[in-house]
Length: 186
Image (cartoon, rainbow, N blue to C red; front, side, top):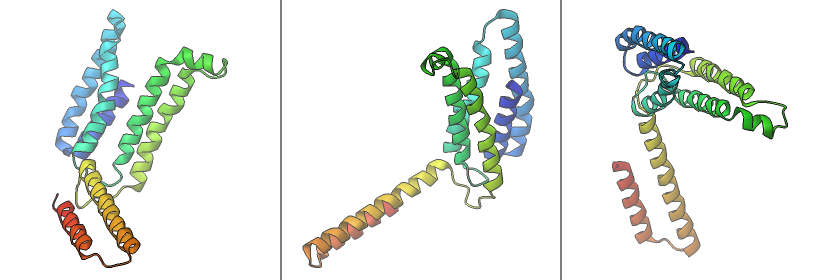
C-alpha cells in the first residue's frame, strides 16, 4: 500500500506542479513509506504507517482544489479520495458493521470494495481527460460556476417580478443590471 500511496502522490505532483518535482519526489516518498513499514514491524507502532496512508488522502484533495491542473476532469481525484476515506471508516467500524448486518458482511469486506473504487475513479479520469488550455484550479472553476448560478437566479427573479407586476419596471431592470455587473467583477 505504501508503494501505491507514494506513487499516486508523485503522479499527482507531476500533474499539478511539474514533471521534475514529481519525479524527484518519488524516491523520498517511497523511502518514507518503506521506513514507516519497517518502524511498524520493529516497534508495533502503526502511527507513521497511518500517517503515510492518510496524508495523501487529505493532501490530494487540498492540492486538487488549490492548484491548477494540466488536464480536465480533476474532480475524479476528489471522488477517489472520498472512496478511500469511506474505506478507512469502514475498516475502523469493522465489528459494528458486522453486527449491524447480522454477521453477513464485515467492515473489512466493504473496505476492500470501496478501496477498489479508487483505481476505477483514476481510470475514468484518465479515459475522459484532455489537456486543459486554461489551467484553472477546481476552486476557480467552482467560483465561476457559483457566480453563473447566482447570475441566473438574479435574472430569473427579476424576470418573474417584472412578469408578476405586469409592467416594465425600469428601476428593477437597472438594479438587476447593476447586480450582474457587480457579480461579473468579482
